[in-house]
Image (spheres, rainbow, N blue to C red):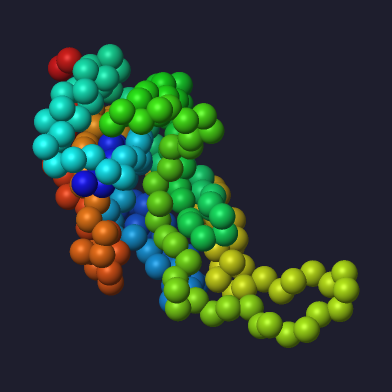
Length: 199
């Protein structure tokens, strides 16, 4: 079973972001495939292969880790891209608390350095137009693919985005089922939840 631990922003926070994405979505057309609002989250850790029978153990371990943290005051802010393929929105607010959360060995994962709190909002579509393969002269730069240009424009447009604050009070354990979601994407199903702190 593919599982990840995540913090999910409340519906009103995601709706605020969705409104901010309207112009970017219209400009991108079919070049970028935007994630469904119900699938958006801040991933803390991912484990590609946990046996179904280990679900309760994973939840128990998560509960012990989460108990050592107070709820976090967060907001979505800024934007960036990974590998010229993925558009993300960053997380601001209690940066130190979020860094500590990201550094924990959720789902038995070894903590990684340089992990960034982010919410994925779009990926370059397989149907995106490609750069022309015209011959070029030596020293001439390669032509950028239209989708890459649109991705860079989206990052620029969203770099000033700052959403409302919310208090994150729990960590979700989510199963990711490949190919079962909309348009053959992954389907995310919440299989458990643990509180931050001991409230």
